[in-house]
Length: 65
Figure 1 (cartoon, helix red, strand yellow):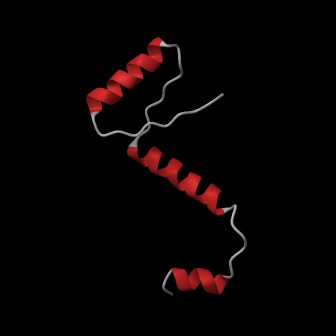
Figure 2: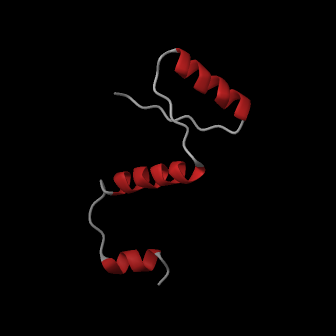
């Protein structure tokens, strides 16, 4: 299974892409803004997990505390 995420502002274009995907027999799910934000955050966390360990002091410094 492969997944493509397409983000756009023009609702007519997005509707066209959704219709095309359905006609091609692809599974389609439109995400709410909240779901898209959650997905984006999860991707950023996943990417951040690839970095080396960081000390608590460095985290607090980055947070300005």
